[in-house]
Image (tube, rainbow, N blue to C red):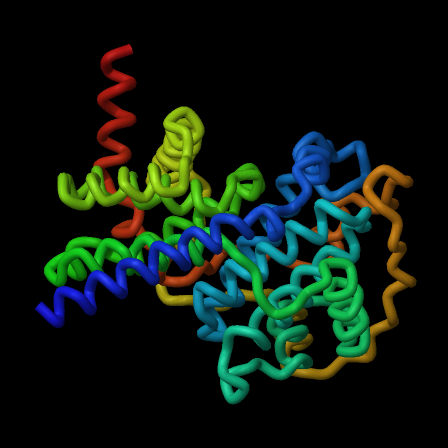
Length: 342
């Protein structure tokens, strides 16, 4: 009876923690108006587009895997990046510096100090064209604009809480509900800017429901429904994001998807890039970063110009957690069946 009381106390604490995080998640959301401006940007607008942002997030996934950083580091980095991009008018040529700054800031919060990658290595492996001083200045700008205090409530926060709540009700569920798989699927969703508009609690619950239905667990479904009621999440809102998550994972599992080769991370670079990676180069300082907001004026360079000038995309090598098993075939089969029925 004492163990049962202890379990009940743990469950109570988890639900209280869940409620507190749910109340505060709104403070860590990117501005929706800024995200919509990014989504509506075309190449001719000479501003950061959704395609450009998504490619940079895939690069962050690659670097996270390469340096052995945690999912928490990646998710926090994406949160910082999206909040900053939705708030500030950024020239595309500064995007690499901004994204790498967000990754370094996140790593300093979530990783052990002995596991942190030195800044100069981070820049060289990231194949970026700026200095350590540039990165330091950018980190200060991002931290100041976001009032960064080393924490953020993200979809991963809720994913871990939901998982703990499920486990607190039974000890035999650990093997059936794969948290690593859920984390990999969350990463895939975050590579699309549209999911940055979702409330973290709802995005995490959408992923959880997707997985519960895949393993066909009625007990877990009942607990997930209880969580939904506890957080007062409307059925319609949850259904909307569940459909978007299912579509994203279906697209990702599709052979037509131009996702990377998911073998062990390998770096295949040109001779010129290889020489750059193995030697310190003197690089000119970037021009001063304008701190105007989105609606003040347009930037000068397009994302495509930056990528073609030598900053090659790293997303040809995502981590092993991007492999097929985490994006189940049942999603593809559902899509195929729907196609046959139409």
